[in-house]
Every structure is written in C-alpha cells, then in structure tokens.
Length: 408
Image 1: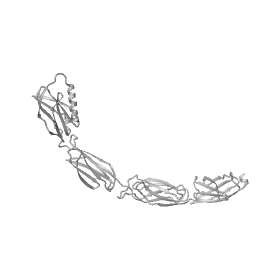
Image 2 (image 1 turned 135 degrees about the horizontal axis):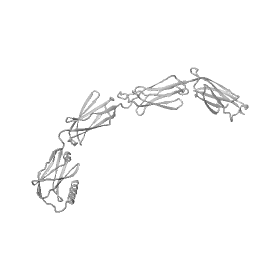
Image 3 (image 1 turned 135 degrees about the vertical axis):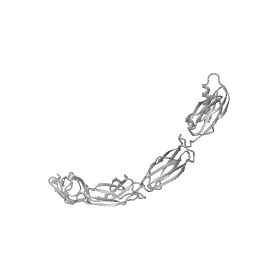
Image 4 (image 1 turned 45 degrees about the vertical axis):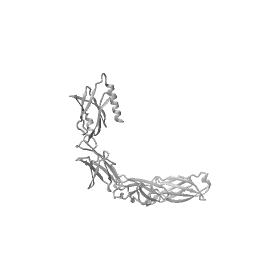
C-alpha cells in the first residue's frame, strides 16, 4: 500500500509539473540494472529509451523517497543514485515514471559493507551487588562504516576481567544487536568488560560490584563512668559488619541504635559505617536506669540486645523547711565524688497529705548546688505532709507540719 501511495503521489506531482505538449516515450529497455550490491558502492541504472521523452526515476528506501533526473546519451539514459541512498543497507525500490505512467520498476538489495566494522557498546546497571543473583546487561551494536547493522549471526567475543580472573564469552547478533547477561561475583570490586568482532574492539566498560546485604553483628559501648549524671556521653559501636560473602559493607551504611529504658521509653541514635564499623553517641540519663540497646541495619540485619546500667550520680543532699518563709531549701547536693552537682539538674517533688493522697507536684533546678522552692500552700489544710524529693533518682522523704499561722 505504501509503495502504491508513493507511485501515485509521484505521478500526480510530475503530472502537475508538466506543461505544454507531452513528450512520448515509445519504450524503455533494461541496459544496466544491478540486483545486489555492497553499501557504499556507486549505483547507476541505465535504460535504452525509444522516443523523444526522458523519464524520471523515483528511488525509495528507509531514508525516504527522492526523484533522480536521467542523463541521456546515444539513446540511453543513466540514473546515478544519490550517495546517501547507496550507503544504506536493505531493500531499495525504484520506479521509472513518465507522463503519469510507470514504465518499469524493481528493487536492489544493498548489503552491508564488508570491511571496517565499528562497535557501539552499552552496559547497565553500572552498580550491582555481590552474589550470584544480581547481574548487569551488555548490549553490543556492531555496524559497518556506514552505520548499517551487520548481518544476523555475526560472532562477537565478550571478554571480562575481575581481579586476577579473565573470562570470555561468544555471542552472536540477532535483531541487529548482540547481548549478554554478566552475573555478579562474590567479592566486591570492579568488573572490566570489552567486546570485539572481526578485529575491532570496543572501549573498556566497568561495573562496580558492591557488598550485598549486611549480616547479623554485635554492638559494644564505651563511657567515661557508669553514673547517671545527664552530662557525659556514652558511645555505641558495632563490630565490623560484613555481608554473607565476607565483604565489608559499603561505607555510609546506616546503623540505628534503639534504646529501651527501664521506664518503657524508647530512644534512638544512629551512625554510618566507616570500614564496616558504625558509631553513635547519646547523653547519660539524669537518674539511675537500666537500658536495653540493640542495633539495626534496616531491612537487612540486627544485633543481639545488650544491657547498660547507670548508677545514681547523686549520693546525698540536705533538706530544710524554713517555716518563716514557707520555703523548702535543698542542698548542698553532692555527687559520687562528693562534688557539687552541676547547675540545671532537675529537682522533682511530690507532696502527699496525711492520708497519702498526692496533693501537688513541684519542680525546680539546682543553682550552685542548691535549690530553694516556695511551697504552694494555698487551699491547704493544717496537718502533716510528706514531701518526696527526687534528684537524679535519689529519693529523700521529708515530713513537714503546716499550722494555721502558716496558712493565713
């Protein structure tokens, strides 16, 4: 259908272009009509023409369609093809046209150029994981000097080098290309690939093989002391994390450390691996605690849980109730070395009546080792109250008596 469309359009165009009296061609006889030729070789069709007119030659292939004017000499007309049409392999159709008629038609098979094979190669993905399941794909497109694909079944040689090991594969082209799946290796390194055919080689290609998923690992911790001072830092570290093929996991692999406290609170910190080891830090708690810590590489592996215990950092402190001002004075507060505790350490007080019902909660912070708190006595009844004072997990109970004079 497409062929007849071209013929119809060409006749229509030529017919519209004609003016005046039509020239008559009595007959057109083949003189030189090749059936096959090599890409790049000149093509000239020659006809013996009887009559006064000179027909036009329409040429059509995958590049498109063109019209060639004939060169008439001694009763013969020659039609040299444009060079672009001689370089394209495949079927080339021709039609000899004159005065809205097709005088003759045929086809020429243009074969690939025999020499100077060129090679285009593509590979991907460029990053794969160690192990027998992952692979990369090599695609080679050998062509002749005019960029025509080589004939089906052309043999290609694929060469690979991984560390000190070289391998070769033989691949044949089909549907214009040659391709080969190249399986990953168990060790993480770089894989080099080259393709050759008929003495022509491609450029060097490289694929990076990365470590596979992490396998279970262990974690440890380091700290300056075991006291819950809310000031020092504890650092968690992993063992060297490897995959199932003993490769150290890639730098930058994220490890998340989940801390479950004795109060049921969950804390999180994370670090990235360098040479297979990840580290992350966290502040000490501000009161005695027992932590359960576990490391995770999300979606891949985790560590066993470890226990981390913190002792109370506050050893002792004094408490005095100043009746004249209704202030509660706490301090000095001493730590595990009998040192003054740092400013800002929280003080938590629960107030209970003589029926042990909680009637109030009071908070404050240490300043220069002391904390002075004005007790909120509004709406309180005379009687004895118990104050439960908590500083860094160290509990002190203090009984105070409130009288009518104090509550006025």
